[in-house]
Image (cartoon, rainbow, N blue to C red; front, side):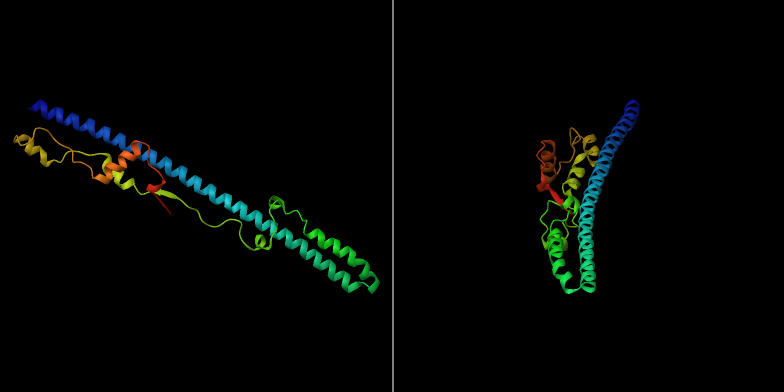
Length: 190
């Protein structure tokens, strides 16, 4: 019996070490996935920032050209006689035509409708898909027989220790993940 007690203690230490190592691997994998997901989210935000800042630059460039044109027209109107105004009408018509052909940088290929200059090119949403299966998976991941079964085993009422079964939902979640069938339907978009 003393040998069995010693073996029991050794088995406990071995199993505790295995459990710790296994759960540490899970924590490491979760930390790695968390880091990768946060980096992807930051990249999404930075890319949207860049698009919006380019759009702002484009709008500011257009406003600068329009302001220059208005200032030039004011100078002409305030400092010209009637004959010069007739001549400058042709020049002003060319300038107004040039306004529609202004290079606004990265967005030059986008149709310059009025809404482009009034509305953001992208929205402020940063969607994230998070699995709603994790609690069930974690609960079903590891199990140990109920300690109350030990007395039944000692009394001959049971012939071995049984690990409590997982719920149907947990089993289904485990099957989906282990068979590679998990999909976006098991995710919650935040």
